[in-house]
Image 1: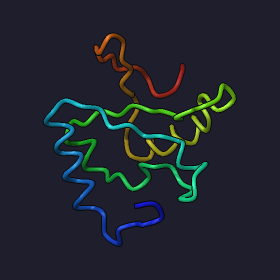
Image 2: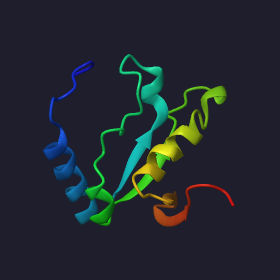
Image 3: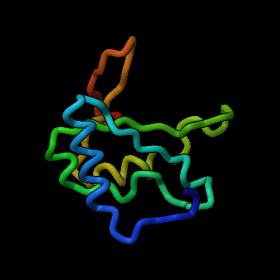
Length: 104
């Protein structure tokens, strides 16, 4: 439901993160929310315990134009680093490869 924010989403985030980790899925953190009415990154409220549960993350900009590819990637990296994430999942032919969050 657009525009609705749960007052205490922690239990929902924890359940999603646990399910994703058990299923060996990566959670996408997308910068597209900054361009929508919510005006924030879609996974800003992701709790720290998700990382400890073995959950991997991937990033996206949900770009529908060339100009928006990689939009706000630095800010997305800042949010992930603040949660202790220093590498993200990249996929080729459905095979995961963990790569550094920031280029050396």
